Amino acid sequence: MVDYAAKVRVLPDKSGVDLSTVKMSLNPFCEIAVEEAIRLKERKIASEVVAVTVGPKSSQEVLRTALAMGADRAIHVQSDLKLDLELQPKAVAETFEKLAKKEGDVDLIILGKQSIDGDNCATGPMLAAFLGWPQCTFAANLAFEVRAIGGERETDTGTEDISFPLPAVVTADLRLNEPRYPTLPNIMKAKKKACRNLYY
Image 1: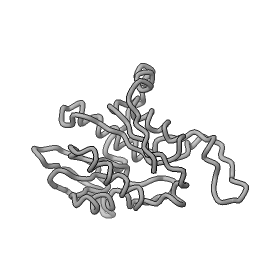
Image 2: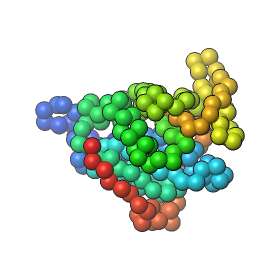
Image 3: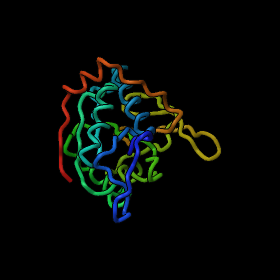
Image 4: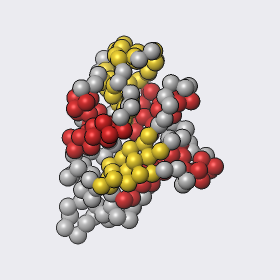
């Protein structure tokens, strides 16, 4: 998504904003998802954290932030389609499904519950449906057992206790954790970490 502090310019044909020169930043809910994945690795529950984004060339900044937070590697599916106008949640979910199958040994996919620009909450549930995996949307707390997850999820009337087997898809809500700030040494290390480019 476009960084909240960036000055944006409307395209001459008024079809959207010019994304070619603006700074991109990690969606807050996705930042929580990255933080949760890193915590799982720190607790030796996960063996590797792979950050993935779909978007224009400038989206690499988002992946660098995830790498600086502690992700092991990153995959950038480059697309010139306009986010939330031409590039819809179904296409993103289908892309993530193909990547998960190509990567092979994937047990858990954690996404932000929604984008704050388009406000869609559809990518995670669609991805779970495409993969045929159980899902937990609006996750507020997660507890990991052997090949299963328990915890709670946000609802309109409070929270709901949940339990489901792995592999699974989880979408992160605000109460799941408080994301860390990348330190300067980690920002410098992130520049050396692998970021693979794919084209959509």
